[in-house]
Each structure stands twice: as C-alpha cells, then as structure tokens.
Image (cartoon, rainbow, N blue to C red; front, side):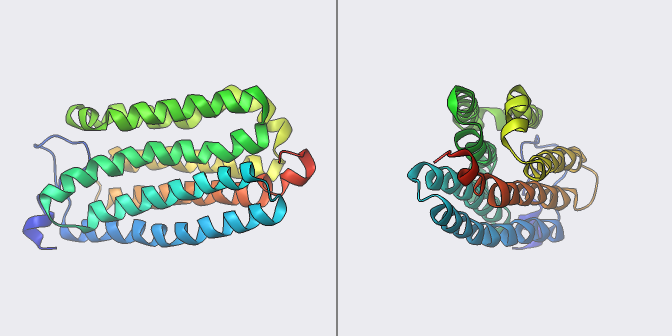
Length: 236
C-alpha cells in the first residue's frame, strides 16, 4: 500500500472531512485483525471438535459453529478492508466490515441462547438479536453514509440486550462462564472509546485489540463452560 493510497482510506463511517489513516495505522489495523482471523479459524475448529466430543448433538455443534463462523467472517472482512489499498474495493469492504460486526454479535449470542438458556427465553433472545443483525446488515450502506454513531449505538444496545435474560442466565451458566461473558462485554464497550477517539494515533488498532479481547473472553466462556454444561443440563 502506498502512502497516498493509505491517506484516502477514510476512517469507517466518517464524512469526507475527517482525518485519514496513516500508512502505519492502516498496517496496524490489518495486522491486528489478521492475527485475529487466523486465531478465529483455529477457534472454530476447536469449538466444533469439543462440541462433537461432549454432546454429539447437531444443535450444539450448529450453535458453536455459528459463533465460530461469525468470528472468522468479521476478522477476515476487517483484515481485507484495511489491507487492500484499492479505494473502490475499500468502499465495498467497509460495508462488509461493519455488517459483519452485527453478525459477530448475533453469533456470540447463539451458543448461550440455544445451549445454556434453552426454552422460550433463549429462542426469543436469539430471534431478537438475529433480527437486529439482519436489519443492521441490510441498512449498512445507508447507515455508513449518515453517521457511525448510529452503528455504535446499535452495536452496544445489541450487545447488552442480554441483560433482559440475565436472571435465567445466572442460574444456568456457571460463575466462571458468566464472568468471562461479562468481561467480554466490558472489553467490547471499553474498546468503543478508542473507536470514537479520532485524534488518538493508532486508536483504531487499539480498538481492534479490545474487540478481539472481547471475542476471546466469550470464546473461552463457550469452550470451558457452555459446551461442558451440556452434560449437566441435558441441553443436547
């Protein structure tokens, strides 16, 4: 990527008058989520293997596969968006990048909704988050032309929608898994500070780190507590 090309890469969702990423920033943006994409592929394989070993249930394997696939999709889209210098490609990849955030959030909910919560509460929450995700993805081209604040608000609202089912989740999910889940949500939320801190050098890359930290914490909640919990709850 040349410096001139990197300078045309506008920060996601900002207007044309906003500052651009430097070449160094764009490299950092691509590398942080490039590493995350590779780890997500490995994580998907681990989740599927553990789910098959613990339950053999198609529902459990499918739920964790959706979570794992959503990780791969988001981090791959983000890496491509920041790594490819062609400005026309960037416009398309920017839409895909932001759209996949909705997919990751909904994908992260899926194992907790279908395996841990079960019943109508889990199904209702799962339908709700995936409905928001579909709407967010469908409107992404319009939202990016208006304001990135709309996306940020929707991301945070969607992420913390879990509080509506917090009581049954506390009952069904072991304490360690609950702490990992909440810590992941906090990491995502703190990361937004760096996302909107436009004047901070490498702020977007720092946000990337917090996003992957949130994903990793919730990944281990699923791996260490949700999947093994199948044996205790009979969720399969």
